[in-house]
Image (cartoon, rainbow, N blue to C red):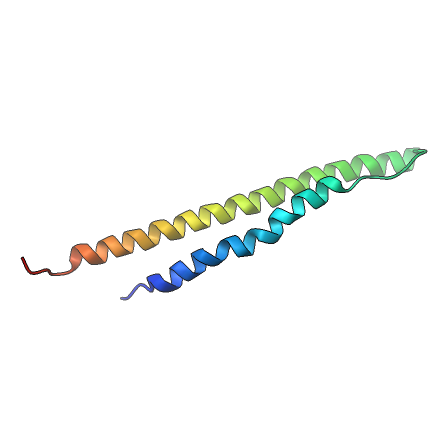
Length: 94
């Protein structure tokens, strides 16, 4: 069995690029507002619903960003573990 540490490193190095758009979403979400000067009961309920959707979406985006960091940490640990195991099992001359 051969572990392709090079491919793992490549995947790990591309994760920040992949998560980049998620980082751009949060400021965009915060900047959105419900523009209504005379709320009716209907538009008021829509404004409340919007706030809940906004909060949920922001939580989900943050969770995805956190998941990406955990994946990156896991890949780093796998690379190190396999490298250490291969070095420990290699024969060396004294």
